[in-house]
Length: 121
Image (cartoon, rainbow, N blue to C red):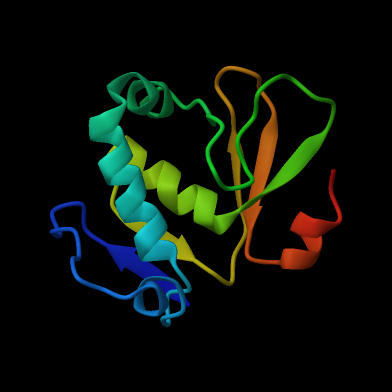
């Protein structure tokens, strides 16, 4: 399923937890909106994401230090990262996306496959 939302869209208000996290988008819009809010709270963090750094966030997918090989990250991380950068939300839940951290050169594959996320340290 393709989940998109332009950055010009106002943040949603007054939704219940279930509406935010258990809707058809499975929380992707909420994660993206949190990224947008966090960019105002922490402009330095937002700047680092704009430079391509895969910063550590609340979802699996950030990179603290260089590792051998690549790792997997959650599409919820990818949504929040897009919001932090000020990008439109644009995630296809059926596809995996590879990004390379500009700070560590680690490749992270963002996926909706929980088995891949859970089978990794």
